[in-house]
Length: 253
Image (cartoon, rainbow, N blue to C red; front, side, top):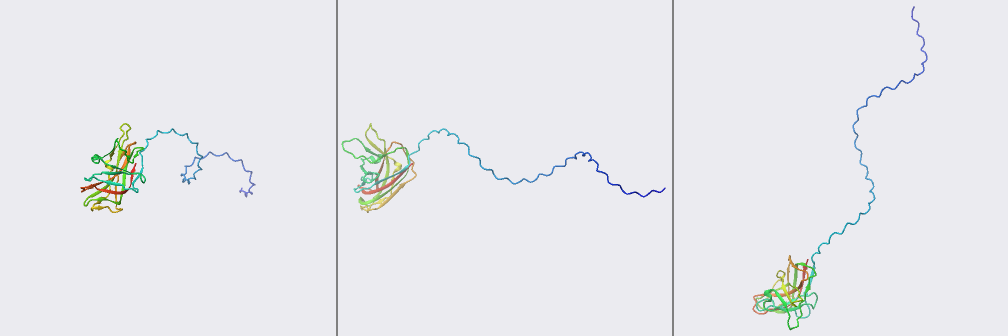
């Protein structure tokens, strides 16, 4: 016969047990690397380590040359004469000192200036030896400056030209020879501006300056050194005499 009407749906049955887990799927591709993050702040300094032991002392270096400024002067209340002979060569010279009343005069023997020597040898007379100093260490003379200031006395013949100067003279004292013979150091001769003669005295406080720089004159340790002051003349026919105060300085290194 004919099919009947479908009946009502029955109630849902209980949920069945969970089925077994299926196999793990294949690993996906690696993603792109992310951007680098900002650098972090520096950490705190660590504590100082212990001080290491002191190293051995190195060898002592050589002592360097003497260095310094040497002032000098010729000035006091008495006449300080310098002169030339009739040929214009220095005759009466002064050894400059380092304080008032300390300079000494020496009259050169004929030919001494030409030989660039100043001699003190044994003799019967009492001699006041020149003012000098001893180099306590080797040094090199670099600069010399000097100023002459006229004391208003001294004759310069008309037409003569006079060149005041300062220079260094050295000697090696000898206890076997018992004499002092200075040798003038030619390169240290430092002339001032000249005085020109008018046949009369030089005016008071007529000033002349001179300097020599860039010298390279080595003086060994233990050398006796004198600072010599004088003048040299041109167009001279008679002795020329002057009285000056002198001020100067020497640089040695």
